[in-house]
Image 1 (cartoon, rainbow, N blue to C red):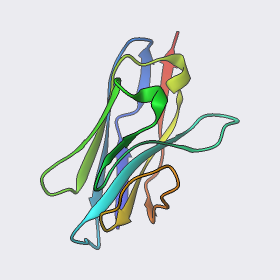
Image 2 (cartoon, one colour; image 1 turned 90 degrees about the vertical axis):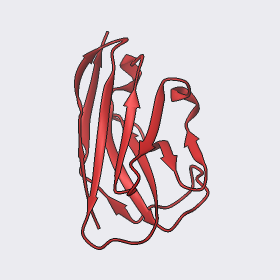
Image 3 (cartoon, one colour; image 1 turned 60 degrees about the horizontal axis):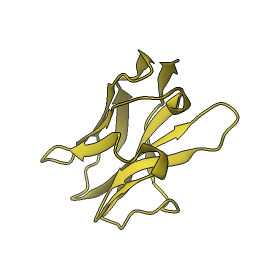
Image 4 (spheres, rainbow, N blue to C red; image 1 turned 30 degrees about the vertical axis):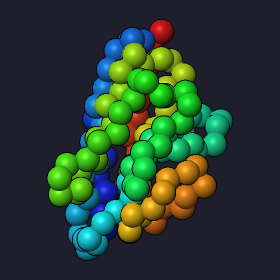
Length: 120
């Protein structure tokens, strides 16, 4: 499966962005989908994911929302009240099957990153 992420950009603190991740290619009946980010000098972290549950890392709870369309082929990450510390390259990911999401879940498929920059 191929994943195509889009929607990154430059925004002022307090602003909003919506990231999209479209899946194509070999299609499985169900996927667990996630968004990761990696800031310069930091490890990649799971930001949000949706499988049999919905997961958010603590720093984005109440500000970010992950959702997907009925076909489950497109996933969005709505990001509100953005902060400079949200600046990172954001990656979408997918795992064939429906899993309970936790930070240790390993994903099988990755999209290219999209840069999100939040200015103060």
